[in-house]
Image 1 (cartoon, one colour):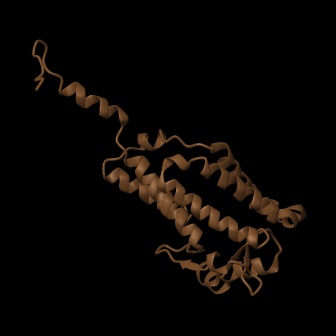
Image 2 (image 1 turned 180 degrees about the vertical axis):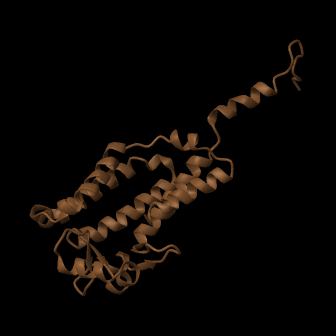
Image 3 (image 1 turned 90 degrees about the vertical axis):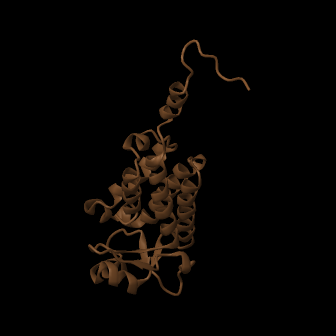
Amino acid sequence: MLLILPVLVGVILALVRGGSLQHLATLRVRGVSAIVASFVIQAVIYVPAVRDLGPVREHGAAIYLVVLALMVFGVASNWGLGLAARLVLLGLALNTAVVVANGGHMPVNAAALRAEEGLALVRTIAAHKEFANRMLADRSSRLVAFSDTLPVSLPFGHGSVCSFGDLFIMLGGGALAYGATRRRDPRQADALPQAVKAPAGVRPFAG
């Protein structure tokens, strides 16, 4: 939810400033198959009946690395969309580096997690009874500075613990959504010359 919120804010701000959802709908996104596959795999492995399965718990880390690889590939395909897309890619790359360095899991600060998402989740992750893409950070954790250490509270609850990579993803996603929704319809660019054409029989000034 926290990663989606900046996108929604970007779209709303663009609409207020005269943007259109039609502009957003015509954004040419590449690598869609890889991005969708990444989301689908994540949705499946987090279903309670699935994440409790032995094979998922045993190979969950490898599955999560595949999920990240698909997402990085899909987002990297959109390099041409500009700085916003590249910020998203930077965030994904940072998160992926941390996950790879920690054997397929993202370390999370236990105190921050308890404050934002509750003690029950801390105990669940610590018990390893079901698959989770996060693990509690300890002395053996690597690249901790770039892991989930930043508590983010929301006024209506449902806060979370984020990484610097997540911040880049949120910033880039919001900027991309704003820019895509705000951009002028290309058809308007053709309307101006039609409006200023000289009347029939009148020769334009040649200098």
